[in-house]
Length: 442
Ligand code: HAM
Image (cartoon, rainbow, N blue to C red; front, side, top):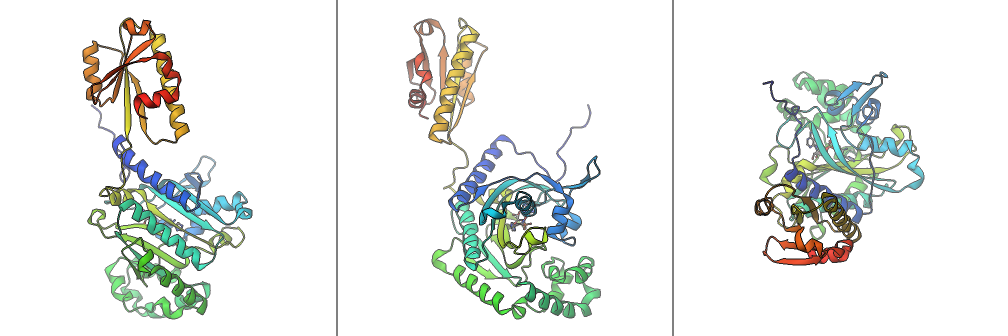
């Protein structure tokens, strides 16, 4: 026997039962997006490599180590998207969406990063992602962060998260701070991790984010951005922090200003934030959601200057957060109807009947917007008793017996498998979505 094929390291199959939970989380995230005025859009799963390297920064971990990049046959370098933001901004520019500002855009789907897999960290993962382009006001930051908190609150059913917030300041503040950091870190350069020695030249702020104990030891006494903020950035951040640190309107447990929070991507400016979950289920990867303002990115990628703020949450991490919440029904109510044709039935008639029934059900579901999961299947072979037993075993809610005298008199027998009650219905009824809804309690 040849060896069994396995999924690639860091990827996993989402089997039907898990998919249902996965789908519910994404549906909640999508419904909240609508509530906050977001419209959904999709970008390609792969883009020219430059889309990511130009936006996230050549020296970021994602671009320098984690991208799945390959040459196409036309010798173009393309990359499987490691995040949504860069692709959305590329699409915003290439589709001339500037004239429709302000825009609130929601996206969801798979992303790819070559990271070391562990619980809550995969090489193929999924995000729900929200971008708000065209509003520079601090009120937009506050609303966006409250929205992020609301998303986590509605999925976990309680205040389980801490908001970490920081400002990276505007261009002027960052440039002053960068100089101060370089002056502070240079005498310690030899003791920094290899990665951080490289970062010292290219992007010293990223060293503050390092998890390496050698870097942590040195950066604990590093100058803080707070002392280098321009008046405008300082006032802006204070306004945002004050609005969020208001216990009455919080969806989260608490708010903490975290000066070492710099986020790993180059495009951020001013407000950056993360939500960490205070539940044991997430292990080391307890950052469920993260984002920030990126006012310079659209221009940097070739568009007109456009302020923007956004965030993304990992769906796999949201799933760990949601599993203890009794308020979120992770599985949809389902109705499973099994049609059992008797031997005397013409198979063409069975297909006709089943087709009509499926059509009426689908019309009813579309019209009512119901999220009920309804299945209609046919059980062809075996004795009637055995087929009834099998239907019961697979969780059928109803069976329909087709054939015999009843069929000749244009009726069929519907059995409710939960109560055991049987009723004879006229075949005509299957043409009427309303009648179907009443019979099967749709
Ligand atoms: P990020 O911090 O790289 O930000 O990712 C956001 C979230 O995606 C993380 O907090 C985590 O929940 C999830 N995530 C990231 N990597 C993995 C992984 N390997 N496995 C599982 N989950 C993961 C961004 O992606 C930004 N584009 C967010 C943003 C939107 N900023 C502005 N707009």
